[in-house]
Image (cartoon, rainbow, N blue to C red):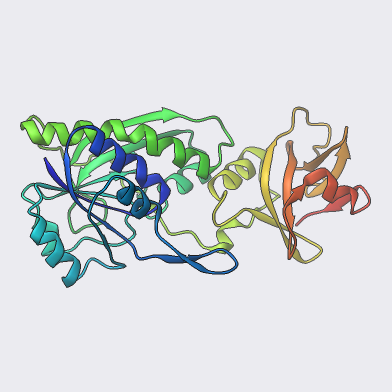
Length: 307
């Protein structure tokens, strides 16, 4: 099939490569414009732009799929549009431009977790069975007919960044199968069934941990917010970002009367919670670089209280 691909971040790259490897002709790639990155704010192409250029594919950079992008897409005469985390909406007339419309690889089992942050919100809710869905794109948010889907289990405490990286590769199977089914006419899609839930966009405040909650809930919240927007608690009135944590092997520091206390235990920084404890493996104080959690705690005299 002649395919027009739209995507931007790193976890859209495996899909682009999989479509090419499956033997389809990618006639063009739309991705967002170069963005300033790093402390020096150097304009940098998106991961999808870099992959497309490496593959020798025509690239159009646009921050919105407006008239210019639509005109360029029309000239390509694509059979199918494929979108994976482009970062913008596909509206008419672009939506109906490819002969077979557009399909989207979404990182949840729709209709659960429609919206911007499906993996993050699923992990925050304590879910460990995470899925992917390939569906027909329609104007309503993530509401089109389902073509293919799949799911797999993740260990508790898997951070969203790692889960997304895994699902980006895992989901290529469902995507390639959907394209093949459309190409040979064996797939038409089925309406989504079940109650919809929404994965609202993440903001910095979403990363604030409530240390009064049970350990499993704190760990789930941390997982959903890591690495972005970043999970944190407050120490001495300033945010302390928790880059890496893990469930402590023992609950020696647990106690309902003292949640939030951090103590050194066998050389580890152990955060006491109401019904268990977490080891603070790597932390980042406000205005400083990330560091070993135990080293940070030793610098506080071996104990601290987070809020």
